[in-house]
Amino acid sequence: MALSPAVERELQHTRRFDFKGFARKDGLWDIEGHMTDVKPYGFPNDFRGYIEAEEPLHDMWIRLTIDEEFLIHGIEAVTDAGPYEICPVITPNFQKVVGLRIGPGWRQKLRSKVGGVEGCTHLVEMLSAMATVAYQTLYPTLAKKRKKSPAPPTTKPPLLNSCHTFSSDGEVARKNWPAFYTGGKAEAANE
Image (cartoon, rainbow, N blue to C red; front, side, top):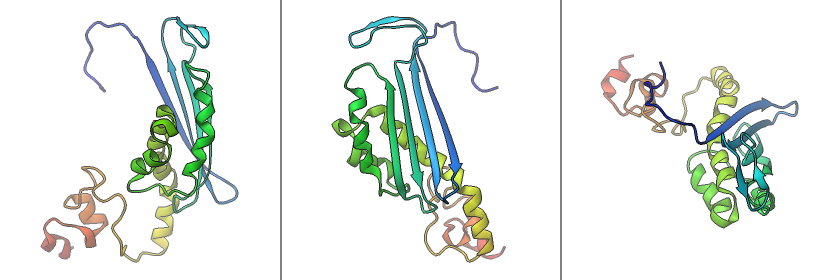
């Protein structure tokens, strides 16, 4: 069971995200995102005249091209539908993220390059979520490389302290990154 049963209610809005990660033939990786906003009812819109029920109010796409160090080599942002004629005009500005690296401080980096009037709230939100999709996409490949070269990491693993599970004093850190484990040091040394 996911959520508890809800009280009687009526749907007003649906936002859908769809993210996919691809290994490219040239050794790079594509991370793609698609977002739509739809309403279960039609309504007037100054720019588009009338938006029908289930017709996307927002329909937006992003493709990030990255390498195994999470460096961004390319980006394509597209707004197929928005509530204002000017919405798609900002998509070329997203080229500012080329050269950034997905990692600690990712959201702050995005805000500094394409936040506020320099970007689109919805595209920035999608890019923010795409970071974890990138990690999930590359994880199997990077894990295989680590097994071939089993030297323990000399720098703090990026996942450490990124959430409750990866707490530096928790079981996952003790098992996977003993050099960075901050819980009972004696327990880690005895294994």
